[in-house]
Every structure is written in C-alpha cells, then in structure tokens.
Length: 210
Length: 210
DNA sequence: TTATCTATGTGACATTATTCACATTATTAT
DNA sequence: ATAATAATGTGAATAATGTCACATAGATAA
Image (cartoon, rainbow over all chains, first blue to last red; front, top):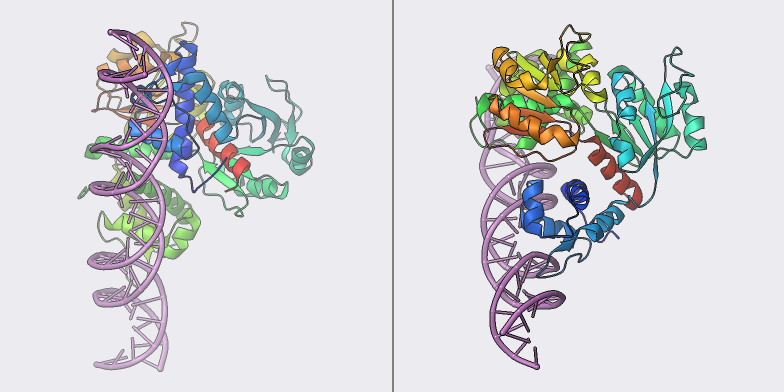
C-alpha cells in the first residue's frame, strides 16, 4: 500500500478528510468534489488530490469522489480496517475521561487494559467494564491481551518509566499525554498530545497578530 | 518583538523548549548548550539556534544559554508574561477533567468561566470554585470577565454554534477539542486537539513501518 | 456518435523549513 | 597577554512541502 516517502502531514490530513467524509456520509452525501471537501477541511483542493495521489486514484474525473468509497480507501491507507487494542496507563482525570469519552470507540479503537500505580484504584471497574490493574503487571497483561498501543496519562514524573515498561512489553506505538518528551528506541513511535502547547500558540497569536 | 514571518512550527517548538527548560530549572541546571537541549527535545541543535535567532540573541558563545533567562525570554516571545483568562464550554468528561488537571494552571492560565447547556449542571461548583453557567449567558459573562480564550469541549454537534457565540462575544482564540473542523472568521485563531488523529498516525506507522 | 462539460491527476514551479558548516566571540588556562 | 577551547549565530545548501495550471478522462445530452 505504501509506495513512496509519505509526508507525515499527509497522514494527518487523511485522518481529517476521513472524519469530514464520515460526517458527510451521515448527511447522506454520495459524491463530493475535492473543492468542496477542501473548503470544509480548511485546506487547498490540490492538496487533497496530491495527498490521495500518493496512494492511487480514488476519484472519478468530471465527477468527484464517492464518499463511502473514499472513507473505506482512507481507512485501508491508514491501517484502520482492523481492530487496535489500547492500554491506558494512569487513571487520573484525563485518563478516566478519555476512556469514558466515546471518541476512541467511535473510531474503532478498543480499550483492552487499564493500569494505575495507586493501589486504591487497582481492582476498580471502569464504566466500560475494564478492571484496573496495577502498573507492575503491565508487561504481562499487555502481552496476554495483545495490546498494540499504550496511552500514557500519568504525571510527567512517571511517564518515562511507564514508557520504558511499554517498550519492554513489546509495544511499538505510544500516545503520550504527559507534558514531557519521552525517550524511546526507534522501533517505537510516539505521538504527543499537549494542549498547553496549543494554548501557547493561541497566546502568541493573540499577542502579536495572526 | 515579532520581526519577520515566524514559522508556526517555530512557535510550537519554543513551547517545547520552554517546558524542557523549566524541568531543567527544577533540577537546578544553570546553563545548557543547544546540543544538550536539542537531544532532550528530540530536535536538531541548529534548529534551536535558528528558532531563537528569529527573536534575538539569547545565548553566550562558547558557553550556552542561561536556563532561567531563556525561560523568561521565551515567555516574553510567546506573550506568556501576563495572565490569560480561559472559558471552558462543555463540562462533560473531558471538560471537567481538563479543569481539574493542573497543567493549565501550572503554566499560568486561569479558568475564569465555565459553561454547559445541561441545566442539571448549571449552578454547580467546580473543584476550583468556579460555578457553571448556562451557555445562553456566554456572551455576557465572557465580556464581563474579560475572557481571552474559549475552550470548546462540547459534542461535535454543538461545537460550531458555540464557536459562533464565542466569536460574537469578541473572542479571538479558540482551543477546540470537538472532533470537527469549526469555521470562524479570520480574526479568530483556532487550534484543534484531536487525539484520535494522533492515534490514526500511530496505527499507520504500526501498519506500514516508520 | 460527437460535442460539451466538469473535476480529477500530475508535472512544473514556488515556497517554506531544516540542516550544514564555519566564522565569530566569550571564557579559561597557561 | 596569548593561545586554546567551546558553543553560539548565521549565510548558503539542501530537502520537504504546498500550489498552480492544464492535459486528461469520465459523464451527460443532443
């Protein structure tokens, strides 16, 4: 499926296109042009066509893209046509909220394990039925339940040690909510989510104009 | 303070440098070279020097950067040497968790209003003392309390309407957690936070190699 | 069948961002 | 003083990314 060097930016945009297309699908839109889709996603129409061109030809000239087809194509491109098992590490405010929040599930992700270092929390049952395990059991359970991606929602101070354990357990993908740059071997792919960085960008723009 | 066209990427990296420097400060590190800082932030040393060069000369040749000075310089560059008032709109899982989560406060941001459409929630007091107002009062209260940035943590279906109200209330900066691309006039700067997009990127990497 | 229309796919171009390499300057030791 | 050292600041080279413009091909209607 992957032919050339694909820009990371392209991958991120594909996710955005997919979400917008899924919206359109619910509104029963059958076909859409790159121009209309671009407007809704806030990008250039040629950008969309270029992004898709990395992976093949998915449109019909003179017509546009069949919405449902394109959703499926993008899913395949991104590797989303299969289940992905997630483990949440850290069930403080953010961790618990993320599990309760429906968005992960809506996009086909599955929470199959949850860990915390607080023995008070261990053994408790989350709304989705998952029981919280102690973080000491991480390696064993991650392997047992075939977890693919670890989500770190611990305080910054424990993030690196959790990351190390995840790597030891054979995890190759980490979503990191902790406000710290974690160090992992090349085999492991890390994506960081830090809202305060985005807020800083807003503060900058408000201070010094767009 | 702003001289030329500053890349957005530079602004985001400055936030990251600042966070790392703040860590170093706690470890009582006085001085750091671009090389060591770069390693900790996962970037190229020249990148750091270039990013800073947009705004002036902050280092000492042959020595490096004084950590505490550089933190202050970056704060000034980003416009963080003053308070910013935030309003949270939507107090579901994510909204409440974000307010309880200490990270915004730690970086000097202040929650000065909270809104929800659910009349059950209106009037309740949050852990930080804020009382939840009905979203109908948004415009009035935002003006009254001099809110600078709105954080949208509502379901996707209400995000656009909330954004419209924020713009009406004179807000020029929005942090959007809702998984939808909101449309606003140019005067308003929007930053999106969508973890599932990051997860998609991880899925892609796991599927098709780094 | 043929002409017309429309929106894709793509090569060429323009822009933006990153890295390199080295001249520059503060510091330290002799 | 002077030399040696170290790490910044920066112009030039490179790489990556985004945009334009148009030839191309499917669809529709006469």
